[in-house]
Amino acid sequence: MSGAVLGAFSTPWNLRAAAEVRREVKRFRPDIVHAHNTFPLLSPAVFPAAAGAARVLSLHNYRLLCAAAIPLRDGHTCTLCLDRRSVWPALYHGCYRGSHIATLPLAAGIALHRARGTWKTDVEAFIALTEDQRQRLVAGGLPASHIYVKPNFYPGAPVCRPWHERAARVVYAGRLSSEKGVDVLVRAWSLLGSQAPELCIVGDGPLRAQLSQEAAQSSAPIRFFGQCSAEETQRHISEAKLVVVPSTCIEGFPMVLRECFAFGTPSLVSDIGPLPALVREAGGKTFRAGDSDDLGRQATALWMQPDQLAAMSLEAHAAFLQHYTESANYSVLMRIYDAALREQRDRSSDV
Image 1 (cartoon, one colour):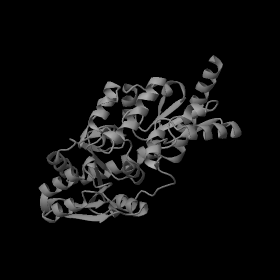
Image 2: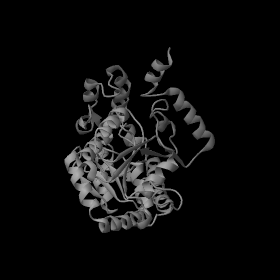
Image 3: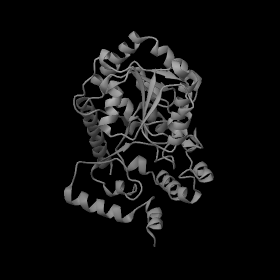
Image 4: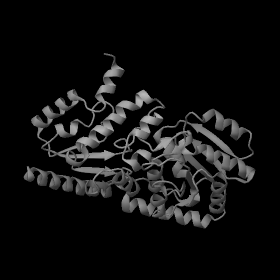
């Protein structure tokens, strides 16, 4: 049997992985088993195999309910499988990699674990990245009482660059693909023309050649830096006076926002998914997702008010100090672990 076929059969339920986890749990006797991703080969079979420990699962996407993991189809937001609590839309559209065959094992896994109640009986605590994600997961059928919110955090003690030392530029950092809305951003800058502030695009992806060509035909100051290291990317963000996150898909918790908060860089984000709520407490602003005209208007309005941008910088860093430090995140995680342990004890006593 080929590796691809074996992997497909193992996606819904991997007997070998379950046996290995069961053996290790019996040997080590952990209090908590915390998983971040069981796709493709571990499979959710590891959760019943870890019975006896409090089982915690971090949800970095929507894979438990959505075969594509990101609620996006043909470049547009699609939540049919979550809303209907069904895998038939995914099978019909071939949502995973645009293939009906490739979608089948993922859809089968979703249907299997929904039917056997894996998420109600074999996981004591789920961790969502945002309240928006939590609500969508509840709507999709996960148990509301077991889903907790713990955002991404920035490790260490980042230095917030003084406002007067920052360069007069706007930064986009991320994958150059349609769901990230970077084409919307370049179009907005092209419409603004030579009056636009300098836009620095950090990252690479399938739209790189197209966007470079569009930028070359525009009078707007747009520079492409390509794929950069994490350190270089963070330097671009920390030196900027504004970061734009123009996503057209429902995000989890973009790491670029974590870094905006850590370095006190103001943010302008699309009004979709969790983004508005994330930046609201950090002084950020929004524009209509997918609307280049509105993006251009909102960016120009902000750029013409340097005092407001400086105030947004302070708000962003204040939000970081309150919610996104190592210590704050650790406290949240320990509370979730405590809740998972209580739930595990309650379930054990009911047996």
